[in-house]
Image (cartoon, rainbow, N blue to C red):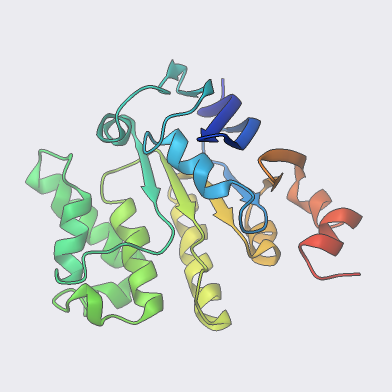
Length: 237
């Protein structure tokens, strides 16, 4: 049984069909990627999976339980954390206050403290900036903070939406090193990413989304050699 499974997911915005029957799965411990151009439906899929918007039809199951109609806060409590596109940190709160906000579902102060220590081990730069307001951090530090806040609730799976967006190449490499480390400590990851080059390097399996449809899926080693993927997403003619 897959940890997370999406079956025949359909989403409309009014008369526009944004997702046209998407199916995918993530097994425990996997790092899976979903690549595609702007407007392909990647963010819509994550928002519908986490209760931000309601699907027209289809279902999402998590650990065998259907979660399609649940509220977003209930989905978080089940063990799913969504790091949205554009970071969306609290700019007037300190880095540490942002992190603590990510642990709002935890009732134990000792667990919050343990999670903070784990996050600071993973992201030592954030430990140095813990008393600094989020809005004064660099773009890369804000993205680190958004991801770190996402794991403060002890999720079993992390949804990452465009973590490379707007960042310089060297910072992107650093961010993806952190993503690999998070996967290694046992977190499953569904990575939505427009930068196909790096996404296909770090993930083990990938889905290609085009205008609301999954058009190709395969092991990332095969996707990197796929002529359509190479031409459309990797810049290789």
